[in-house]
Image (tube, rainbow, N blue to C red; front, side, top):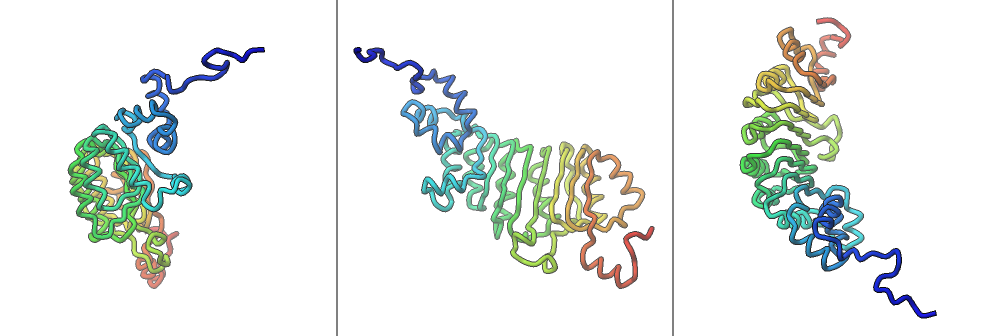
Length: 285
């Protein structure tokens, strides 16, 4: 029996011949990570689209790929190398970025992605780099959602950093700041000092959500936040706080926030002082 002379065997498909608009739709579902680690290597047609279509790189994130980069031999720093390539391909259209950053990466990021609306810095190696961070944020006027995890103690205090970020990004809707914890600094909990949160911030009329991790909150700091964020719907703070600092005025301000979570642990120094005086947390003021 003569072999099948048809150009394509039954059940097979020429994926390289997909119309460009359909191929773009398929690649959009994959995202930049999967495109660069596999899809663009499938054939010349797919690689051409991967290189020439900025819309594929509007959302860039390289979290959770150590095992993939290790298998492909990219080596240390592969995530940021890939991110830089993706930012270049985005041709200024990137609107969301998620990943680890050194302060040296910030100028490249804001140059390649001036229209960022969402920035999630999962780990920021901020040693001597906080000024560069604020300079970069001022160049992102469309930023609405900002998250950052500091890996080192700040050059300034936590409330000064919060104030600087708010001054640089007055139009934020959501702000999440995780300050360096004992785990980040490789020290014992009893040797660890949380970042103080004791000052005022600029007016943030559009801020809806504020989350602060690992800070030493005072009643003054809480009042400063509530006074300057009139549309705040969700406030979540972890760390230290003396609940006895909440007076009637502050209690009424707190009641305006729909979702409110405050620390329930005293600063160790305050706790030692209360223990010395014989106070109990169960006692009424």
